[in-house]
Amino acid sequence: MLPRLRVLILRSNRFHGSIQDSLTNFSFSKLQMVDLSHNDFTGLLPTGFFQNLKALKEEVGYDSEYFSYSVNLTIKGLELEFTKTVHMPIFTCIDLSDNGFHGEIPKVVGELRLLLALNLSHNSLTGPIPPSFGNLAALESLDLSFNKLSGRIPSQLTNLTFLEVLRFWNNNLVGPIPQGKQFNTFENDSYRGNLGLCGFPLSKECRNDERSQQAQDEEDNGNGIAFIWKVAMMGYGCGMVLGISIAYIVFATGRPWWLVRMIERDLQNKVSSWFGKKRE
Image 1 (cartoon, rainbow, N blue to C red):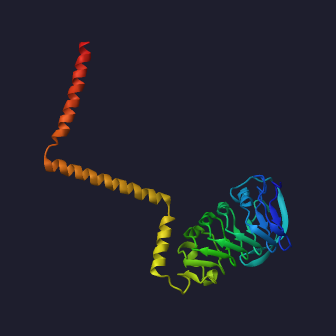
Image 2: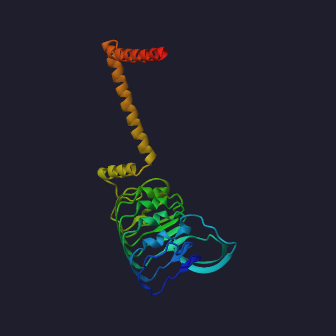
Image 3: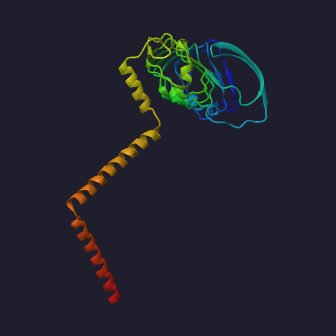
């Protein structure tokens, strides 16, 4: 129950065991800097912990206080010392590197849209990179190296237009590397140790089936509005074809007498009903 805590640095100790999910939804609601690196934590990444980081999801109000702090953080591959006197909010980051976490990365991490740096390297994480990472709009540094991640690199990561440092070293990633925006600026070094990857900037070219699969994935993960537009156009096209077909039948067979008789009968009934009311 530390609802006002903003900075938590426990790096380079001998803490061990798993991190349990909190029993309350208010724990760490203002936390913005988390460094638990270089310990012996194990178990799954705590989903509830990430869900409670409200200060990394949306702007929160702060008192007119100034804070002085000095911490060492591994950001963008460099160990940096921060000594600042600042008014909140401060630099936002999560560093859980050099531990023994296993299992998949929780999708809820993708909700931390104000996060600037994320380091989950040197663990035993498995499964795919969550496509929800494409929602980390402010992210500048992403380090997932030295894990056991598998599958394709999600095309949604090309939405991270502020991403400056990308490290996927020594995983089991496969398939074409997404293209466009920031991904066109990364070099081979970002992907080393993933023998199944192909495409620019690597020298290994992708097979035709891999390219077609990538195009299909990008189409499936595209804008939902585009999909709705396609459905609407299909419906419009079907309606137009049906209308033209009916018009052709009408003009080809002559006057549609069945339609005329139906309209005349309806008009006659209405006129008779009107005269009946007049007599009353």
